Length: 478
Image (cartoon, helix red, strand yellow):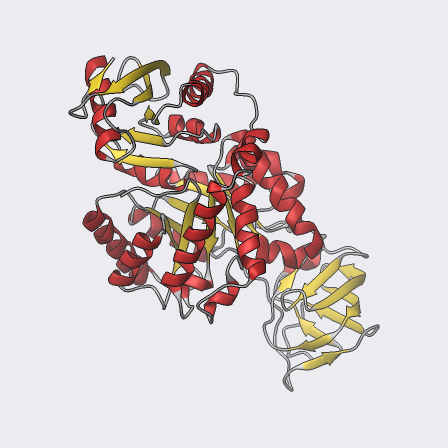
């Protein structure tokens, strides 16, 4: 079962899409990776969802990736004694360490780390940015603010501090337990929320130890300032536009999306564009024209994957949402401008043998109009290098490691097949040709190009290129 597009689709599972038959329908409609949001999932439910995904994987016979998305720290104000209060523009409002219920003049802020980080002039955004405060005075026990944009404020609404770097880990105690549970279920990716600095990734890496890919969600202004370091320490990146749009001016988000996408492409790290891509399909069977354009922009930009959140998790039309995203992506990739845009953003290969081989394979495949680029990989690094090149020819990744094939299901254009490693060069060619033929990528008489490492079975040793003919019986011929 092959896709007719290169960009991948992440679908979030939830109340609308937890049953096994729906998960299978989502996959058949176009979902390549399933996201489990740990904000709304306990460990028993996690185990159940992973089990159902793996059953679907077995039924379909294709490796399927699973992403466990950690909740991250939730910053909220305290409670009010007489219900919601109305904050008027220009009024003074205090957030403090006093645990008593609040009123129209003050409220408890149960996060001492925020009070310690605030300075005069810093902004505080409450309730998804609907209310904006500016700090006038600050000390470790309270912050006196002026209401810049007022409104109704009720119990436990969220707090964002776009101008302050908070001295706290991106991983909470809950995240730590959820991460252990996710690794016990052999998920393929874990997503870390509210990353501010490269150090935030170190703790997760210490625990995962390579058992899952680490994806950093970019949703804080502080992360933008250290983007290159964060990309370097991550295995993948998500442009989490929802929270990014709360903490930064909305008009800056499209430019940041392009900047992050291109930085990830240069680094050869998968990048996912997420949040509100087909938001109206939560309640409608068809999207708005603007949403279609938004998804198309991410595909044109060369993102590895586009993501559905509430649309597939809690919406009325989860299968239709995936089908719609699949159709948009296919149409964009057939557009006459698509290859020119993708090609213009291509960067030079790194100065390593493996990168040079991958770049050469792409160039030869395009020059000779070859049917496919076939990569042998154990760790997955060769597959990601091939994906970074964004070749016009399909990319087939052959790996003897099931977890590698599942993880690479996030990568642009990678069709992953679990296959034993080649025993020798002849076996390498035969196996590549046979799989290209059986997976419907190459017809008899067509040629493919193969990248591999000699000696066989040695991770990270990509050093070989071969062009091969697919014979009448699907076997290889030089």
